[in-house]
Image (cartoon, rainbow, N blue to C red):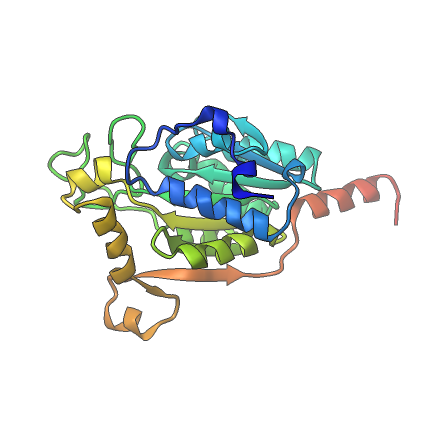
Length: 267
């Protein structure tokens, strides 16, 4: 299939601002699906509300555009009803770690076979640039003109602590490795979390004087380092990228099916 076959062109042009990294994420997500030779009818994409959630409207899979923060709850229902389907859940700051935070930690705890793609642009872009749980202390936002005083979540640490069996982080600058990470996440049997650092030049970049979209992407190059590198030991401020966890653990739907068999006396 051609790349354009995965896109609902009738819904273009998209709503993302010039320079937004979400288009890069969508591009590489499509390429991962194509490389895996997955059939479109075997994929369900579930999203909530926000800039990142609009991806579900642009891709030609089975899609659900649901309530803010509830994407993982809807996705859990779909997976329990149709465990043979591959469920992709694109989320942003709010859907994943604010209003959706409780769903996130429990999906990880259950290790249900969903792929959470979290686009971390550190801001609420669609609603005007309010700070989020991922903005970070001292960062400026529409609702924090003098600087945010909240500490940020570390999504990878949060996911690992809650029990996700696949956890990775990449950036929009590292497009080639992003595809490989997404491929592994999609095929992993269990709850997969891929955090993608993605630029928002319109709000986060402008409010924090980070320059253009290109400048922000260059910062992902210089400000990140592979997991376990010596550079991280020398400079603790560097953000690690790569795969943190990839483990084979009991998956929720499989365990639930075993309970049903026990209840029916099937051995």
